[in-house]
Image (cartoon, rainbow, N blue to C red; front, top):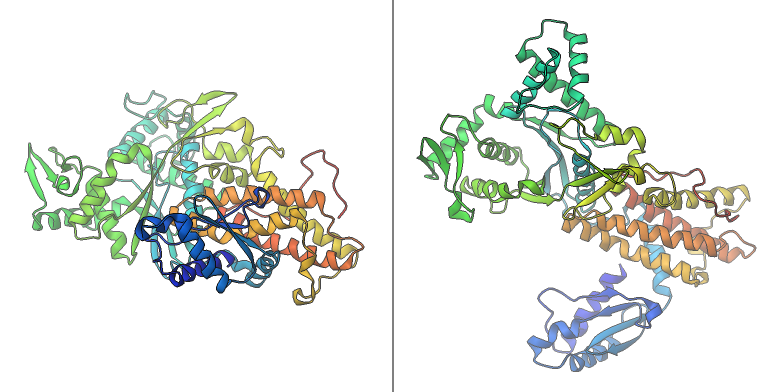
Length: 551
């Protein structure tokens, strides 16, 4: 990749000029050619100045001379900008090599082996089995699945896991609420009041009859809720490798075993009739209760047993996605696992802000205990799963999101997913029109790519050059929205190219070059959409009033 080549050349030039590589590596960023700053820019002289005890400009001059003495491929010239930036100007051939790299890599373009063979367990969603997935939880469906795809794209072995909290008081409250609805009564004061319980009670009566006991209601409701979640996940195209039941931990004695191990290690003590874990010794705000005075475990104890079980199953690194409202539990879990002998910092916790759901400019509340909720199923009844997925991936998970149901249900080019999918459909239409006109794409080595000089073509190739790094950074930072941003920018560039550059023309050489450019665009765009879990259609209905160019 050109970025890696240039970075390596800058590193060699630094060494040749007698300067050490910066601790954080050589920084290199793409430039905007319209600003006259070249194709790539590096502040490496500024990075080195403090250690070298020299002005950045002096360092830049020496590195420039060293780089010119052993120039990398495609380098045309170098300019220095105050206070010491190195601006690299490349010949257009570098962009043509990008096209060749994309085509040569094919479906593997943008992939890496940074995490090759690393065994990662990724747990996400994991809502209590007390009802359907609400729209807020749906954000974790999209984010978690995309992160799994990104990690796999870097060579990791990724296992998607859903944890069923089916052994606690929440399930009892849910069962009591369902039984009350079954009896035609209001739920208990601390129960669930969602309208879905009325529908569930009616289904339960139809299936089980008129003699259901409270325990039967709880168990039937639990399994019905799980089936509902699985149906919704299937509709949005998300598959979990494991559905793990908390009950199994208790049945196999693993919860009790964790308590025993912590006792043998001297990490627990009794106070006020409760059993406490010494998490404050590892940076937690305070010690945490493992077993309450009435003998029932808190959430922390089975959570420790659960994550211990993940390691026992051979997973090397654990990642959990939680809502930000659980931030106070992060250090407790990590400290508890460390006290059990596992590596510090496990599991890695991704905390994300929740979603504000609006309709008609008004807030829609999402609590399952409230009388009205918007579920993932409700959204999927109104919009395509691709729309839901991409909408949830538009922003970083650490920022609050407003999910406007009126906007995402609109079918227009203002909807981001249609905008990017339409770019892929246009690429496919070019191929169809070429076939209709009897134009066959030659082998790439027979095509003169130097014909590609239009600014719209250059925009596309620059964008493709940045794609592998966008994927790598998105995986490293657990930030799929970086790929979403790339996709939207790339679609904008392609729509501009489609508008301004006729692909199939009387100029055979230019036609061939642009057909290969279109193919490279298809490879990059389809891969990016695949990582986001969004389909790449070959045909779509017209979504705007623009006159379609006859390619």
